[in-house]
Every structure is written in structure tokens, then in C-alpha cells.
Image (tube, rainbow, N blue to C red; front, top):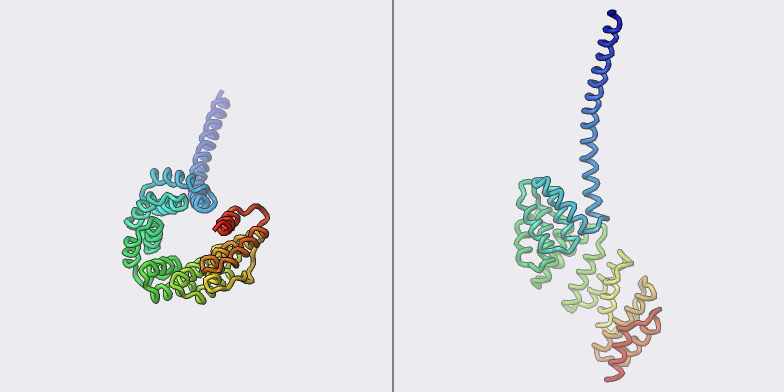
Amino acid sequence: MRHPILVSICAVGVVALSACEKDIKSAEMDRKFQGVNVVDESDLNEVMLTVGDPNEAVAYFQRTASENPDRIDVLRGLSLSLVRAKRIPEAKVAWAKVVDHKDSNDGDKVQLADTLIRAGDWDAAEKVLDAIPPTFETFKRYRLEAMIADGNEEWKKADSFYEVAVGLTTKPASVLNNWGYSKLARGDLPAAEKLFVEAIRHDEKLFTAKNNLVMARGAQGKYELPVIPMTQVERAELLHTLGLAAVKSGDVKTGKALLREALETHPQHFDAAARALAALEEA
């Protein structure tokens, strides 16, 4: 009679031990998955900041920030997403909140200045940049400094900032284009032309630099397209720009010829060139 009782007791012990082992394993798994969740969340944050739809990213970071209001990485993610979504008034508030955070850094101030410039608050952006120590040297900081110096017509400072910015990045095409446009606005056409050529050398797909280059050449009376990489559509658009530059300079005959060439070059109907040519013909 004792054997069944003993078997029952042993069975209960085995079940209890098994349950205990499961609890230990479950706790270990929870700890492991907590670590995985942190990594996964970090990866998800990165994804949302790069390939995600900007407004979806905003919603994600708003939700995450409501659950973790003190996490500066989440607040930064929300601020960056708002900029990507072109929701600049909200982004200004978000970046100001990041800058006020106890763990903020000078890079956050640069981001705030960038957002203020996007909003047209140039004076406020300048004040933010002035508060950053000169020892904090980044491409973005100097690019913004150059833009502000341009706006203030402080040409020597602008050139100095542009030069430093170019040296701080491996992808200087956009800042070279901005620098070239600054030279173009000042009337230094040869210098502008060189900078646009340099920008295109670094990025053959940067059409803005190609168009600016043609404008700089047209203003100098150079009505031949430069030898640069271009698609057929780009060629037509550049001929259109060059034609308008010729007309602006008073050379209407050359302008008409360039506009006709633009129409013939474009693989489809080129409405802008057609309207410009029609207006000249009627004049």
C-alpha cells in the first residue's frame, strides 16, 4: 500500500521540479528577449528614420515618446521625422525640447539651427549657432554658418565657412553648388562656373548644379552647352535655360535658336520652351 503513495509523491516532486525548471528557463528567456527587444527597437528606430514613410515615422516616434518621455534618442527620432515630413513648425518645438534635455549635445543645437533656417528664422538660427563652442566642428555646422554669412552678405566669412565645410565631408557636391550660387549672386561668374563644375564632378546626377552652371555661362555670353554628363531630357532643359539667359542678355536671335533646339531635343512635348518661344515670336 505504501508503493502507490511513494510513486504519487515522486510524481508530484517531478512535476514541481519541472515547473521550477520552466520558471527558471522562462526568466532566463525573458532576460534574453529584453536584450533582443532593445536591439530590435534600436534597429526599428533607424529604419523609421531612413526608409519609413515620414508621417508613419512621426506617428511611431510620437507613440514611443508618450511611453518614454525622457528618452532623448526617441525625442531626436521624433524631431528628425518631423523635419523629413516637412512639418517644420512642429519640428522647431521638438528640437527645442531636445536641446533643453539634460543629455543634449552641441549636435542637437546644430539640428535646431537647421530647422530654424528651414522655417525662415535666420536670426534665431544665428543665435543658436553662436552659442556653440568653435571647437565643435562638423560639416553641417559650417554649412549652416556659410548660409547665414551669405544672407548677411559677409562674403569673406561665407567663403571661409564653405571651404571648411567642403573639407569635412566626402560628399561635397551640394555645398559646392551652394557656394557656386553664392558666387553667382555676387556676380563672380568665373568662380561660380568653376564651383558648379566641381559639384558636378562629385555628383553627376545633381541637375541643380548643371542648371546653375548653364546660367553662369549664359551670363558670360557662353551659349554652348558645357561638356558634362546629361540625359536627353536634361539637355533639352539646359538648352531652355541657356535660351532664356540669351534673351535676358538681349540676344533674342540666339535665344530663339536655343529654344527651338530645346523643343527638337526633348523626347516629348516641352511646354515651357514652346510657351517661351511663342511669346518671343509674338513680340
